Image 1: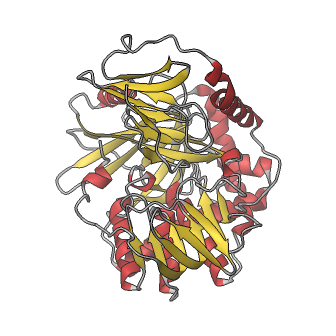
Image 2: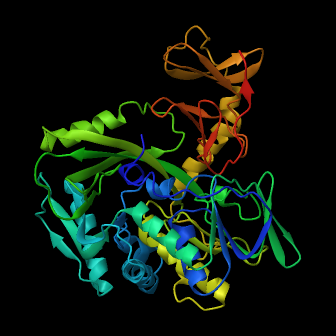
Length: 499
């Protein structure tokens, strides 16, 4: 099911597919918030910009977010001070606070109607053990001269033990904002192409050539804004990030709602925010995130979110269900800047760690300044080519374990299921004549068979019975049951078999 953001704007934007070779100053691969914001800034500066995406604008991660515009990225600032230093944390905070102001400035300058609203943001807990973590975060914010407040009462319809409050954060309708960016880009002679997949980027002399299956774009600069970099080398970002899936429902509560935006400290966290529609106010309830490709039963997740909502709004109506996928870095800091020291004039913004509303604007400003030859005061915080020791060693171990299982261990396991044993509306991996086959049997008993090996780096895929997809546990690529690629870093679909 589409998100509310996409459903409420589904007929508002159509762009053509790239049908000829073209040239520009900057080729931006990806029409989400980061790519379009970068295009907006560069087009306003007079550069000839082309944006290209394999889907429609803002229909991937940016169109499935909860759209909280906040510098409060969980309990991150005490971590940054302890792991780096106060100056580092201060710059991270300032960059994201400025991003809120930047977004509001774009909205005002371009007259974008996108339901922007200032709201206080809270990280709360119902767990006694997390109270000290929240108090430590409050102390960290005070050391950064930021007016954060410890509170024990919120407007949530249940009791909390404590929360940290950030004033004057914001929320909006992300796809209305995206379409406003598109209009401005077009007014400034930018070009936007959709349903066009870039399959490779090659450097020739002073120029890059970005290739689709039938055409190419010549440019001096390239910006990889494709969520997860599809180029494997020399950046090796697949070794520095993993992907997680997060779930959201939108409900009509049938009653008046609270003020503020909220996320819990629990793992996985619960998230809440309101949405003003033309005729009612909705509530977004999010939770139960997990690593992409993890071997868990996902079929219960939306039911669990609905149960949570009905605890407090028993008469509510469930209107939308959706999920999205985010890139998470091993040190909790996005990668922004040069794609690689070996490829000058190619730039990247990725690993926004579920906080893409402000992080995308931070990334767009840094990359814009890099292209314009301007020094950016926050660049050093987010350096994409950094080689510092990774802080979260347990996450490194988990990544190595999952990759080893997907690339090697699971491939040697012999499946015990047979074609007849697969229930309807379920998928399994079978072994037929010595070959592993991914099989989905639909509700009518029709068989859809694929080669269950990820086309990115060859990991064995796992079946996701909620979305009816084949998911990669190594780097997060996803494919629908017919083998079509729907999430990067893979760009090619799966081989199809006839059984």
